[in-house]
Length: 561
Image (cartoon, helix red, strand yellow):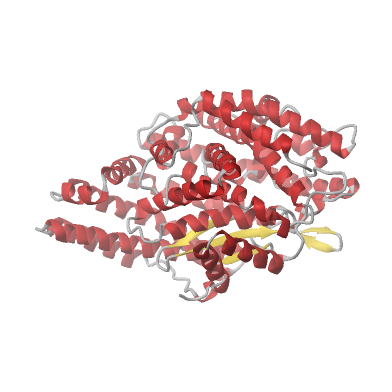
């Protein structure tokens, strides 16, 4: 295994890749032996895994530096080639589905895989290739715009990520100034962002209709692998979240106002929870990595060694820097059987959140590293986020080593997790409105956002910030632009993570075994089946949500400050 910076950035050779896929199709078509057919199937999966690794190396390098010419060219080429690869891959899938040895292969792999194959054919056709390329280009443009921020403050040039620390400052005036600069920059690009989003919405709607769907929502759900529920099931779920968790979030916000001793909560106060400041990590990046290593070694020898391997091979890029895209993510290099964690540390408690959240994703990928079928290596996104969010809670006992005021961190982290649920449901309802009303204007969309804030987060005060009062906060949320309908997955996962947290308080050994079993399952089952196998509650049941809410809020109330 090489260090990350030593991994080659391979420009994808379209002709060579297509010829390779065509050769696998030809082999599968011409074979006269079921065992040989299965071997071809496995060889093809290895080829696709290696190709995915090359793509992720390109994607990560571009995410780290969107201004580097080599990265830009490799990413632009990948944007054009991916749909063509997908087109050829669909030809292999079609051949596999009609192969006379399908039953033999299906018995070896399980029928769920072939259900995924059948559904994948519904989500792609060569006639949408040009639109898929345009969609990726627009998404990259969104990232580049946000990454382009160069804001002078505190004697330095800041980007949106580095401003976050000032926006949590104990000094209210600094919070106000830095927030004004943040939203000032967003205002300067709001017209371009609105235009990008409008193009994305129409493109996606056109692709859905080209493929025979009524609207993009149907297509998005199928692309996300949601075979056991649809958006009509999600509607009553969102209403339950608003009914059960919005009142709890309001109570938490009232307690925060009381702690801060301020008469009126302003938009620039949303980022702070205690009058003498939010809990901040004890040390710098090196200190946090060292403490994380100790934490994971204490959790288990295998987990600890895995974390150290990631550090040793430079598989973490954590510090915010010019040209780096916002946010954080984990991706997996199948060829090398290692994950990569991308983040933007800014000196706040979110740095510790990343070391737990993204590591949860990374650990699951490590647990599934020997699963050869790409589709089974990772579950659908609702389940993926259980791995990450649960790890945040499993790390609670170790927070004394990360914070001077660990109790405050734990309480604020849980408060944020509770308050997140209404926000996550709001984002999803906003997207449903958008894709059912594709010709709505930008003003219609912003008005809808304001309407939903009153429903899900009536305690938020946007006064004093024109960008927010116009209902444009949604343009900060990258998932809305780049990953339509993904965001609701975080809410499903949060409810499951709460269950593991509750169990962990009672019996750590039992909770850890449940978590480990879930990670090792990979993606061998659809979402609701996976939950059942992991002994986690169905999130669509009102009784389940009420029970979880009651227990988790009691834990919150009993937590010391």
